[in-house]
Length: 474
Image (cartoon, rainbow, N blue to C red; front, top):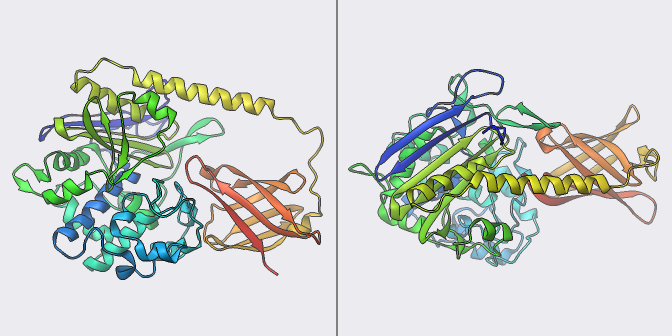
């Protein structure tokens, strides 16, 4: 933990139908003494996706829908840009990342915005796909939002209510919730931490209510152990059937190959021959066993669940710092120990990879030429001011105030920034949301010498790699 600078973490291990280890390490918030315990709540983020898939599976088991039912028949408001893809889209497609949108593409529509889930989904049709429909795997949060809305349409209750009633309650997950608002007044809650100007700083929880089906669950390792027990025992919790066997089998079956396999994956998992995605779960072969896993990442928190069904082994690690990979190292070190594999320094390997990457970034930055003069825009600053629009994100206004250009994108207070001139028509936006950091903002000047458009992306490494183009309105 010291090498990775992680303030606190919690871990639980399930073997068979029992919790064999559960412990907290470190503190809930840096600089404060309150310790992490097995009951400390963390944001589970994308670990929530398996709950959404399983919840829909309960409706499939009740014959209220089918995995391969057309989405447009039950949720006509959700449309992809390609009408043919919209007509062909199935519930299964929503849950295995193969609709053609790129990884995290379009997440800025909801990330930090005040839009509701229906408002977010209305704008998905404005996103040009990166790939062909069902062409390949690309991680997509937006389709899980659609899955949650479809569940609500069919069941007659909200995603949050359904998950709490049909899964949390029978699993005795009494400390778990579907909204950050439920953490208000709760004492044993971990505080998220991130790097701000090179220093670890505690930050507020981000409200993920408009992304609940993709990442809204909060929990602790003791509660999460109940979920792992059911997943490892074909839906049983002790002598009680909580999840139908058919739902466990379908969600844990490979649905979509993850390709191409990166060199990093190959070096970390030399014994693995395939990587795939099921319905809410990643999967791979590892040391001759099928391994299911899913991570969760949000501002200031990272987590990982790893299951080895053949061994009835499950590990979950929750952490409260987002610039580290200790959360990945610990689960696989535990799996290796139970499989009696050769001891491997997962933390050391991942730390070395990160240090090498950071060194390359620093070297690249040091080679960048320094400005020998004060950057000057090609036009008077007032010429850049005006109203611009993007189909997905909506209206953006640029105003000149006290000699400074200020950008504000509607419905998202984090997407407000001072535009600092960098080189000609290139500016830099320092976003109001510190987690968004900064973005280059280039303008295109048309043939009349008028700024016609600008573009930016926000945190391609974590938030949304899509480049949004804003066209100037007349």
